[in-house]
Amino acid sequence: MVLVDMEGKVVAEVNVTKALKSAGTGTPVDAPTTAHANASTSVPSAMVSTKSRDAPAPPSDPWLPAGIADGELGDRPWPPAGSTDFTVFARSAFSNDVGWPAEPDDETDLVTPQTDSFLPRFLRGYGWKPSSPTSSVTAHYTEIDSPLPRPPDYEFKNATAVDTIMRHPHLFKVSTEIRTDRLREMLKNHPNPAFVESVVTALEEGAWPWADTKHADGFPITWDNSKILPKTEREREFLDTQSHEEEVLGRYSPAFGPDLLPGMYSTPVLAVPKSRSTKLRLCSHMSAGQFCQNNMVDRSQVKGARLDTLHNFIAALLKYRRSNPDKRLVAFKSDVSSAFRLIPSHPLWQIKQVVTTNYPTRGDIANGVDRGQLVRHVD
Image (cartoon, rainbow, N blue to C red):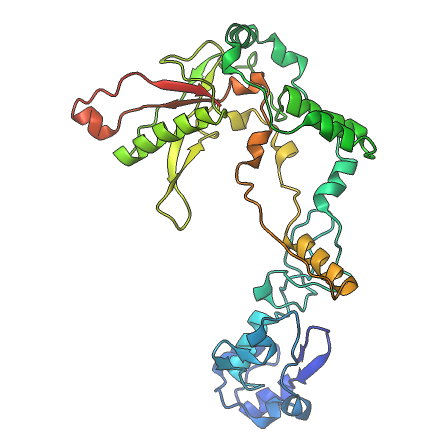
């Protein structure tokens, strides 16, 4: 058995046959795992070859964190070569059967376990070579993707929904802060003009999410599945306040109610705690119930985000640094938490996304508190 470094070079050799004979365990050669488990920390000298004992400390490597590259594991030194601790460390950090590749897959941009990787597993694929690809995954797919869909003719045959949209245009706003005329001009030489035009059209007329609302195939014309009671008064107040803020920002329609208009769908909205925080965030439960929105969308068309990641970004930074070693490069992070809000939905999809608030808590019901009528917004 051998141990190898990041370059695939042998740094230690273990003669399993000699080790088992010397240890006197009587364990068959084809079961080395049991032998390691039964062996003491003080391993017979026959277990490690001269090359292993004389091997220098692991060299400093720019791919490794400073502590590891300097031969330290946090506050602990490298385990002695040939010891049980060293074997455990080697198997977990430089796994011989499962590891992580140095770059993501070219097609999916995903980092998946491989059998031929020498990158430490704790780096989770965050290792780069001079040959690492620096191209933008997102930009690449704009060159080969099909145009974004428009609502099919079938959707316009939902006469009830179309009539409601025509009668209440103030509830179905389609607008964006993106200057579509400027965007179209900047991309006039793009190699995939059909895709570009579909993006601009989606921004101007509203995007369609590869959906089939099944209005003539068993789904109800109007469906109210919004009733879910806030657990606490804090959650109730948050939902009401957040809905009002979304309306002020132009993301929600003006309030109406208490009833849905014909052709509308409404699903539950929840106040969910943010990760590692006591703050709340508003979530629409698009998978609630048999007739939920997620049961209308073609999942094969929306599965798997194809966005640029740190793998592409850092590879590009390293390439730039190699070509421009004396130039100062400043990187900054933009807050794009609401960037998707720049893409409006088509009115025929907006009508399926009504947010309902002002439901009482269970405590309100038990105490006979009247919170008034329900408040509705088109999202």
